[in-house]
Image 1: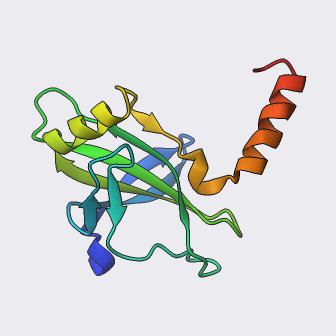
Image 2: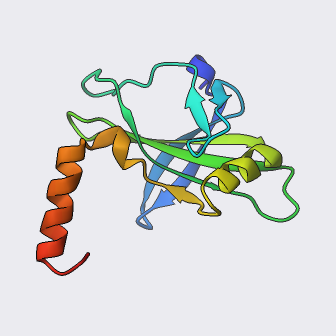
Length: 133
């Protein structure tokens, strides 16, 4: 694939049987120098219902000896729940900056992007009533 900043695809094993396409890219994304890390320069719309999608979570990392690192960014459709993962390959310095903004945590789940304050409070109350918080 070459449209919308996506340079090629890798295939990842899902559940040991099914194959899932993960678009990978080195361009088409803007480095934000915050805990989010990268935002797309292109609209991300659901392939099923054409709704604008939102970031569900992001994971960053690299291994010793790599000259690039990866920010794996997952988007979810709020209408039909279709889900896509992008692998954004960037210089190690960018990924290290994101890790620093996240306090060393590799994974970010930006609840404020997909939950209202009221919904978050309701979930917290339910979890407390079940003894989880």
